[in-house]
Amino acid sequence: MVQKSIHNITVSRLIIGFIAGFFATLIFHQLTLELLWRVGLAPFGPFSLAATQPFGVPAFISLAFWGGVWGSSFVCIENRFRNFGNYWVVAFLFGAIFPSLVALLVVLPLKGKPLGGGWSPALLVTAFLINGAWGIGTGLIFKLLKRFP
Image (cartoon, rainbow, N blue to C red; front, side, top):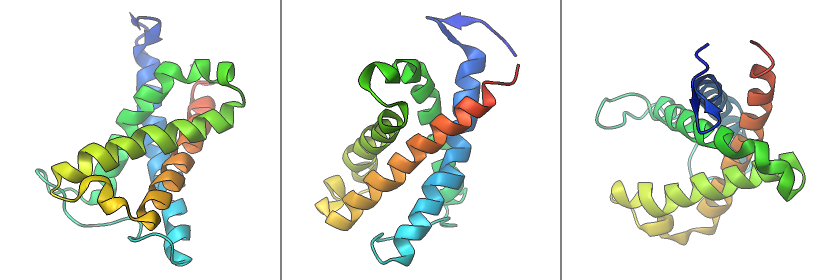
């Protein structure tokens, strides 16, 4: 892989982060959503096939793409997670806080929905838990993938 440095972040690390975030979305995020949907907490189900704009791809594929973008962000700072305590707790909190805030405060209003999704407790808990699971999954997949040259 290409090893050009961008402020101590290699292109290969960013690519691995994207792959980790993409697959963490499909596995950890969506399976956690499935569990929350089955117990009646999540206000929507997993693996939505609804077409997204502007390209018409299924929502879960669009979500996985953005999970990959977040995965690249994740790997830019994940080597500092130990400074804040347990790696897995910080990975969970990274996912639970940052993608959730962007979804609630930026993405939903851009889609014509109320700020914070109307602050529905079920939506807030769902966002926190599925994105936290994504953070753990991204960390796990990233650690597994970075072992390979």
